[in-house]
Length: 293
Image 1 (cartoon, one colour):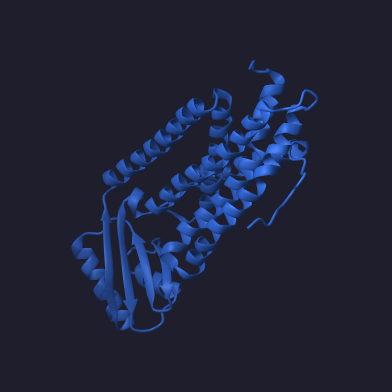
Image 2 (spheres, rainbow, N blue to C red):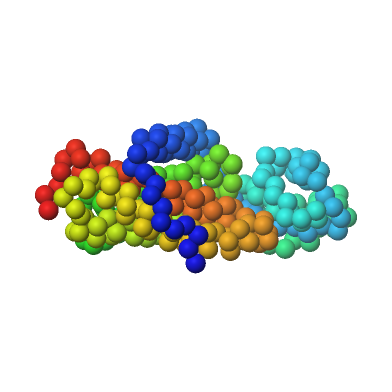
């Protein structure tokens, strides 16, 4: 089903506006990452995560007050339901974990320990390093594939768009101080794959239309026509992908909300970049330094 038919939108006419918007997104994202930082989860920062179910409704303030008597007032507390919460602290020994459980049970009447996760600082640092390597390998592989599949210039503009998309997702995670965990890293890698797929569709249509272009047709006209021809496919793909992710966000519980949020932000910015960023960068590059064909 096509919701958008026979459009004639001048995308290249507003590419400078798109450049400004993209620069603002990247600048805000980088600023947040450098100044606020990423809120690394236990996977990357190391520490102890404990999930409790209590016999009655408890508040975050009540839990923090109890943790303060244990010297853990700065712990991260995430409520899953009125009587269920996750507490993320610095590394705790088994003895301290038992003492904390006993203290919570004493103060709150009932405290069932549902889950414990322990990650040492060395393991967390190693996971961060492996995560960075995974991102770099993914980007490098995409660059090689697109350069082989098309040309070097579309490959470079596609990688710039991927960096734009990935930084924006990380910027939102940093601004909202959501925990950066392995599922969030998986979401970023997923968005890179989604975004490059959209970019390849657009650039492939541009290549086809270049082969059959009219002598009087300008480069911007060819690119505009190409994007309009695949616009319905791009929007439909984004919408059909977003629908189940919205379900995860609203119905999947707290554990899946951050993952779903990262995917939704990535879908929005990835669709935007495949339409407004990739082809616009390529057009300006071609106009400044025409490539012989």
